[in-house]
Image (cartoon, rainbow, N blue to C red; front, side, top):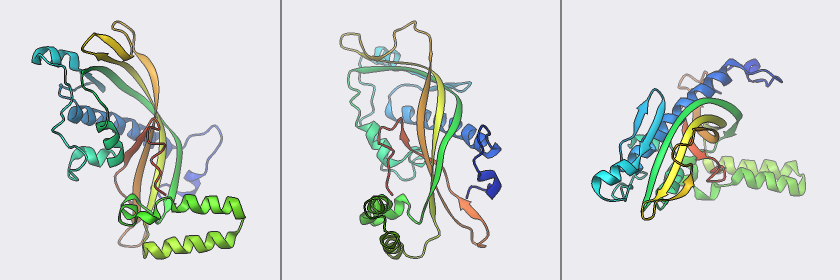
Length: 251
């Protein structure tokens, strides 16, 4: 599916395949770049990336501007299909971030992704997010099949329900690959209410950075190549972070 051989995909206890290590490293880099772009779009303050350390301090910008509103409410950053950020993160996840109320809040963040470990990876045949957007009745189709099998233990019903999905989709060789990665970061995080200086969330000034694990769910669509030999892999996209969308499941 991802260019690995059959033998390379076989899980071996206490052993990590090279492709898993490489994919984990790529996920760590992708997480950092996406976070940097997200902060740059959401927050009206400079975002720094120095040696892989992504940092922002909106209290400095607020004091310079004489205000405390750090968000850019004029930016609709998930509707522009050509926007860089929408190629990095799923629209539903961006909408979740945009819904955060940051008025009167000052953010101080320093984060350095250190390593990423692949936790789970699986493929979903036929269905993609784009297909589900076009045909909303297919949302949760495979979950309904699984639930029905748990209830009836009938392979015949599973076959019929699967065939119905296949008929609704039509000719398609696409698959969606979903991967969960554990991204370990060194970070300082603080949110302060600018009206009274109270720390709403996070750490105190002077605290040392902490080691924090973030669960990041990635997704990519693959399709058969024009020659019919092998598969073409699209661009990985972050679809959930720390389970704030409960996995952002569509199948």
